[in-house]
Amino acid sequence: MARLLRSLIFVPGNNSRFLEKAKTLPADIVCFDLEDSVALDEKDSARNLIKEALVKREEYKAEVYVRTNSPRSGMIQDDLAKIIQKGIDGIVIPKVNNVKELKKIEKFLASVEKNHKLKPIELIPSIESAEGVVNAYNIATSSKRISALVFGVFDLLNDMGVEYTKQPEGAKYARAKIPIDAKAAGKYAIDAIWQDLNDEAGFGQDCTIGKSLGYAGKSVIHPDQIPAVHRIFYPSQSEIDWAEKVYQAYIESTKKNKGATVVEGKMIDEVHFKRAKALLDSVRDV
Image (cartoon, rainbow, N blue to C red; front, side):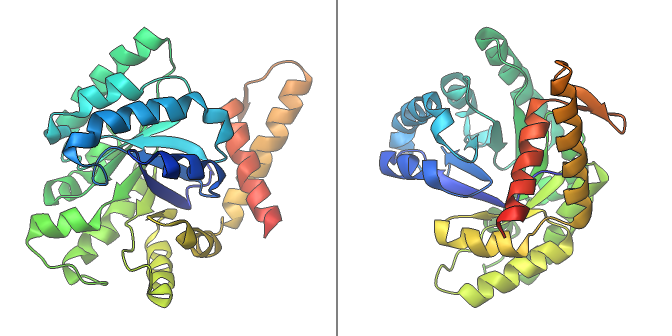
């Protein structure tokens, strides 16, 4: 289903000023980070700051996700136990290597959701290793919770023993494979970050390559990168048409006091309506 996943910006979870600033960011997804941007001795502090931020979820314009620590870190259960609450839209799980890891996380997550009386929360696994690349399709199809895959180029290159360059040869196969696997699974794919904030031309070229490979959007690390991403990853006409159908169908359904409805065999509820409206608003704003 059409939705805006053009930009996913990582916000350090241990920086209260950045968490506050994220309320106004025009990204499609704001992702509070507990992993790479947070030192080991600041993990607990970051969890507490994110928990406090989620209480004010209505003040954030974007969808709000949290990136936990990796399955092999031994910290993910502590992350989930602390941050899962009303207001969180989804979870990015870094360095997912196989389905077994994901199923273990999902089982624990379900128990936490039950305790908080929450509906199942979306998951976006990040593919950052050779094993993860090989298993990308199986990972994408392993759960109905999964909405997208993220490509993580730096850890993949590290896993391969390859030095990073702006267009790394060692990552070409993986970068091309992940959106194919995601598409085959009926999911979206979000491209890796671009590290050099001073190379705007290179960033634009990298976004164009990502779109040509089938990515729906790109991970970003600075607000200044968002406008270029949104310009390049503009919704397709088929996405716009579908969003219009969802929007109109839901409006008609609510007029009959029904709420949820069906469009072309697909169940549509309030969250789909909101995403369709956001997509249509983004087109009108251009």
